[in-house]
Image 1 (cartoon, one colour):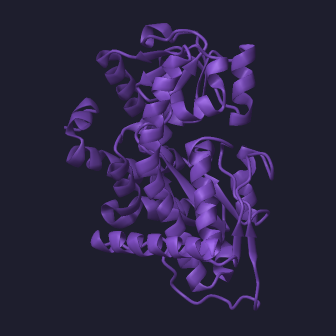
Image 2: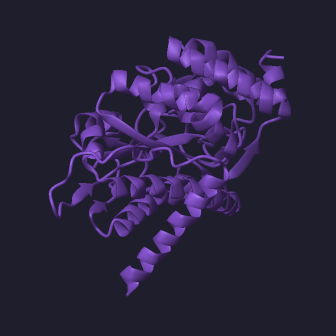
Length: 370
């Protein structure tokens, strides 16, 4: 009875999402286009996707997506989320899904932007778009979905064998900086040892005199506890509380968010995807779209509550001055030309600039686009 109720709930969510998508004149990004090879009768697909964290908002979202897939497919796909490192390191995730070593992963593309420059934009629009609808519009629909098309094309070139289902757009309240030392503004940055997973953010902090590094999230707590780094940008305030970072830091920078609205991508091995019948492809696509709804409505509420709890636990919450926030935004924009080093990323950057002129004229003026 419980299973039947869950199936009815998932079905209702799917219908509602389909109606919402239709009302905006768009269909699920990965709508099936053909029958594909017939799978063996009674076959069950087993997926164990990871993301980059094992607690917090985005981990719970991955759990939800997996639950939707398993329930709506009536167990024909058994999707069980796994913690990063259980199957492979975070750095290896994209290779594992590309080669078929694992069928599916929830990827934050910026980790591989050194090899695929457009991934810096596909992961977070260089942190210059602050509203979830803007990032979603830019990545999936602007210029007839050109950025999504470019991202898929560059993925095919560099990591063949990956089918991108769709990005999931995180909320505005995302990566804040947790620090062992006070960083009240840009004047306090020189000499700071700073870990970040975003290339544009790293470039900005480098320009202010920080020594930036990257290592997996599994090493963050220990690195803060032992003083390997002074500050880290990794996730949101609610995630930090769940991971116990209030035990090893005293200062959290709330404004500016060092990684604003961002996107992470549900990817399936191409051979695995092609083997799925159309109804299962549709179920996976709608489940990932449901992840977008979760991010939009759950994350802001959870994170707002987390800031209050952090202060109750003795964390000093820091907001930079407006002048320093503007200087940080300018540094992000200044880094964009260097980060976008090939034709695909430069085209995506131009689409982003045009988007800023259309929807965010204040930021466009700051960047000298108007």
